[in-house]
Image 1 (tube, rainbow, N blue to C red):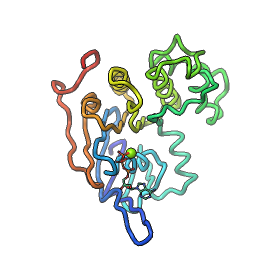
Image 2: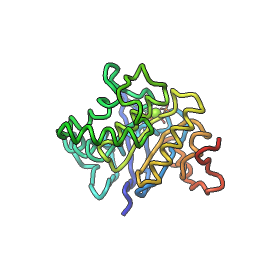
Image 3: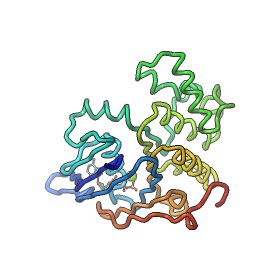
Length: 237
Ligand SMILES: Nc1ncnc2c1ncn2[C@@H]1O[C@H](COP(=O)(O)OP(=O)(O)OP(=O)(O)O)[C@@H](O)[C@H]1O
Ligand SMILES: [Mg+2]
């Protein structure tokens, strides 16, 4: 079984008389260690799919199995538990605590997981090292560049050792060179066994992934593997 198994998943929204089909009967499998970009026009259902995979929302119908756990029928508390253990989120706007150091921002998920302070510090330093910020741990967000802030957010997503990292437009607030660096970092993390799913509007950004899933009107319109020749590699742009 795949790490992520989505079967005939639909998400409808009822708006008064009208029904919005945000996702219609979507089926897809994603394996451990994959690096996937999700593309599609505004309103096509990308965030809806990410919210379902991220256990932030429940489908109207269909099945979702994450790491062998049947998630689609869970209540909110069970979902929160799976989410805390299995998912690391990265956002367009970084969502860091402004008054806290990089180290404290990265430690935070471990505070919620009730991990002792020594282990917390050790793991947060390790995660910051993995994103290349070992020399910036006492900096606060306003003492870091945009790309460095997003690296702190990625370290925070990694620190719980989640099964999947979900990033919705992670390069949306970065210049294109910095965006490319963030995509290269994801590539490195995926080559170390992390599973990464990134939503992006930009073809240029998406081509750093190994697979592109295109969504249109709530349906998967295309699902392509990017061959090594067509992939944009680290150091190239
Ligand atoms: N809470 C909601 N209530 C009603 N309709 C919603 C809700 N959330 C999303 N939708 C609708 O579902 C569809 C898919 O929305 P979604 O946010 O997944 O799009 P998206 O592909 O992420 O777009 P964007 O690129 O602009 O972020 C849209 O038509 C949207 O209006
Ligand atoms: Mg969206």
